[in-house]
Image (cartoon, rainbow, N blue to C red; front, side):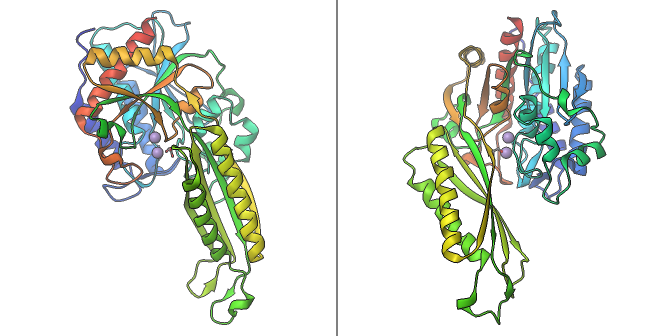
Length: 414
Ligand code: GLV
Ligand code: MN
Ligand code: MN
């Protein structure tokens, strides 16, 4: 297995092609689930899988599986992969490196003459990003049984279109109850991903091995005030939903800062103002609040504090408030055996590594519900991510793909 040759130029050219499927002008990338550009990216990945000799299957929510058959096809497979959907105005590496890197790992192993004992699956998950349906890791949640068929049927996108209609329109008409995979279906899962934070760069190492993923929660808060004319409704009469939202946004920031937990973060990244005119008092504002911590008790405390702050601000300003917890997930932990396989692979490749906690969430969070997992991180320049200047060098990506290839070889040989 000395001759695992990663073709860095091929990875880069495929990342460039993927980045061209974007709803935003370059260098920004926007690729939202089941939009024309996302469908083009899907078709491209399926073609690359077929070209690599994988047999391609899609499930009823659009998760894509490319299988490399093993010497013992009935053994639970080793799985790898990531996502290609991208939040609005983001970069070209988030998720895509883990899909293209997985394909390159399989191609390099095939070329090196490696024959896996277990099958190896390359996955492209549906909608890791919450942009369209308000919930992250839609595909992997469904695979793990954390999003039941009934919950999938209840999902609506930002324009009110039901998930079921949207998926059927794109030809995903299968029975939703077939999506869930049984625990034990996979032997293990490893995801290659950019770090999206500054720690690898700061430590001057090329590889991060993920020991845990912080627990994310999302809260939607809708504030209903009283709209009206910005010139004629005098100040004492106002019940301004946007002014209430402004107070809540600052309360969220205070709650995140006040936590003693070093990994605690709280963010309002979405604010819809209705009707949204300069000369109109906002009658309704929708906020979405993202709250995370590796410490579940601390995360839950922050969620409760934000809920209480919303209630209190609404009461003081005489606006109505609706609060919905869209998701409140548990953290996950890396498996010692998978971590050891990555460590061995990194040592064989001869690169420095550290173990770290992922503060971003990933499909691995849900794969951990059904099999042992870990992740391989490669450095992000200045830690930038979810912005157009996200960057990881070709050398770092190629190194990550080689560590992935050697990790898969170890796991698939056992
Ligand atoms: C994934 O994109 C996350 O928000 O952590
Ligand atoms: Mn992301
Ligand atoms: Mn990602």
